Length: 113
Length: 114
Image (cartoon, rainbow over all chains, first blue to last red; front, side, top):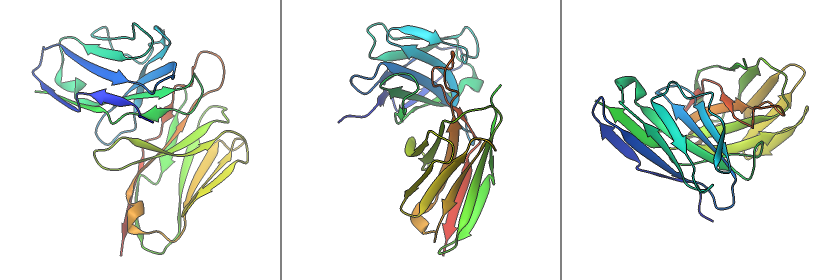
């Protein structure tokens, strides 16, 4: 079946702009995670959704970052007033429920000029 | 705070040789995952280890988990060029409010050469 998909695959923006990154999880997966991977590092947790609600947003670096999952499927990560330090690959993962094996999408490479 | 450390961070191997990558973690857990990442690609799940003493093998790779030592190993047997990639271990903490979020090691960049 279809895996986790993410769009766009690449996003180049200017400092100060607003961006949205989209994640389509595997059908039927209720748990959805966002991670951020900087160059040469392992992914770092950002936020976790169980269904429609963000159960854990402890990894969001500041209030410029926000994510939603209004219907319990597709999720959007939103970054306001982007900064050069936001440049990274943003990975989305889904699992049947929390604590199950996570399957990762291909990621969105964000570059802030 | 859970910390996960891998070593070595860089590994250059000759084809046909054996080697082991180590993954240490700082907090009690019996849930450890190994992933492979090729350049510019996402994470591919290799092994899921969910109990003390768990051992899993796939081809030339074998992973094990010792929860008492808080240590997992990824053993490579008779390396081939196709194994060149970055390998990550990741841990989650069962129960509570961790919700299965993963904490990753820094990654081990493996290069296999003739």
